[in-house]
Structures are given as structure tokens and as C-alpha cells.
Length: 171
Length: 171
Image (tube, rainbow over all chains, first blue to last red; front, side, top):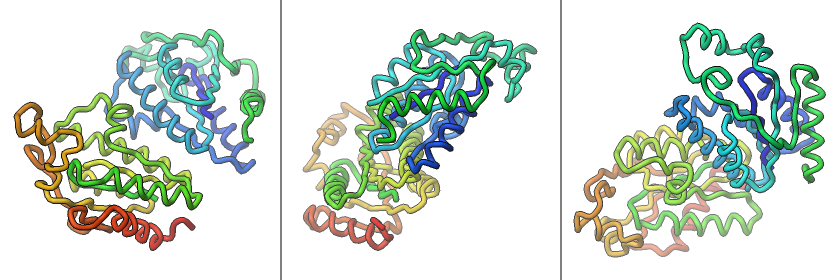
């Protein structure tokens, strides 16, 4: 199974994925988090932030996720994955796929700004930040939606765990 | 554990890897083959055959292999991986790493020429074929050496299985 967390930077994708990972690990499930930032330092370190490179980034993470899934591992992917088409393509690569929309309004994400991305984008120091000068295409029918501006992490994690359980995992 | 099969095209890497896979699978071990040709159609489909692209190709396969290994899977990589430096780098990414040199002389590989690579290279139709107009750097101290011009597949597979067993797998 692949659980794919999509949303703006600072929406809470990694936080929720790590919460889910902790719960599943404690239940004895083999689980692997693929974090977009980490993947950009390893598998995808040759890629930038153009639309084309973002699509390739997601494609590669999808290939790796499907390989892990095929071997019985539950994979939690936390990556902005801004394009609908890209997310639909990775869904096709995977057996069981749960799309989790980690949804917080841009102004909330900007206030959090964990990595200082937004402040630098507003200052014109960096370009191609999703939601600012690069598109983010919201999921139209996500399997789970976490409204992180108005629910706490425990609630979001529970929603995802319920969806995982409803899909029959861990079996 | 990662078992990395290196050698010229048509040396027998995939054949031996698949033989090892079959034996391990029958023993109930979770095993994943990463075949260079398949990876070039998926994870590495943006890459060509320049020295730089070959190094990147091996690097990516190494990242994926180490991710699978970390989750308890025995990974069998079958890829020419022509450069010593590239193989040394993937070794560093992995926990337990067994380098298998699938060694057959170039003229034997050319006679086999399973993919018709050599005949096309000799005709000048394609470039950058390892052993012809692109370097292949032999391992200096491989963990296992399979001499596929003078031993049969069963013998080669047994050598690799012994090395896997000596390294303590499956535990």
C-alpha cells in the first residue's frame, strides 16, 4: 500500500506521515517514509523546481514507492506533488493507493513557514514556490483530507489510519 | 543485503541473478531483482549512455537498493556498472554488500550478444557500448567471481548463494 500525502509546503505532510509511521511501526508493520525533501537530497538531487523537474521528481518517487509496495511494505510519501496528472500517474504505478490531501490555506502555511521558503519567495530571493509563483493543483477527490488549520495532528493521523485500515491493512 | 552483479553485456548477470532469486524465493526469502535494463525503462528513463549518465544510473539504482535493503529485503542488482568509483559509492550506501563479477571475455559476450548490442556497435550504428568504445573497469577484489565462459549457471548460482550464506543470510 502507498499512502501519498500531497499539499503545500508547511501544510503538515511530514508531521502527519511521521505520526502514522509511529503508530504502524508500534503495531509491527514494516513501513517506509519517503520524504520529498530527503528524496531531493538523494534520488532526485539532479532535479530543480521547474514544472518538468517537479513531474520527474514525483515520477521517480512513485517508481520507488511501487517497488517497496510490491515487497509488502507500507509506503508513506510526503511530497508537495503539485500536479494532478503526476499524482494520477503514480496512482497507476501502485497497487493500493490512498491520496491524502494535507490542506491548510496558503496564509496559514506562510505563517508556519518551517523552512523559510515563503519569506524568501516573497522577498524575490527564490522562485518556483508552490502556491506563490508555481501552481498547486488541489486534489478533486482525495481519499482523505486533513484540515490542518483546524484539527490537531492526532486527529489527522487517526483519519489516515482509518483509511489504511478500511483498505484492509495491516492484514 | 545487496548483491551487485557487474560485468559486460551478455556476460550472464541477469541469468545468474534470476537463478539466485529463484533459490532464495523458494526458501521463503523476500528478494527483489533490480535489472539495469528494466531500470532504464522506468526510474532511469531520462538517462543515456555517456559516462556521466552511466554513473547517475548506478547511483540511482544504489539509492533504491539501499532503501529496499533497509526494509529487510535481499536485493539483487544486475547492471553493467562499468566504473569502479560508481560501484564503490553504492557499496557505501548499503549495509551488507556483495560484489559479484560476472566475468566472460569480450569475444564470448560478443558471440552471445543477446541484445544485438555488439553487432550494432561494430557496424557503427550505436555508440558507448561497454567494452567496445566505452570503458569497463574490472573489479579488483570482487567478493565472488563467476567465470561464465567456463562454468555453468548452476555453478555460478551456487557460488553466489554460498557468499550470501557466509554473510549470514537468510538469518
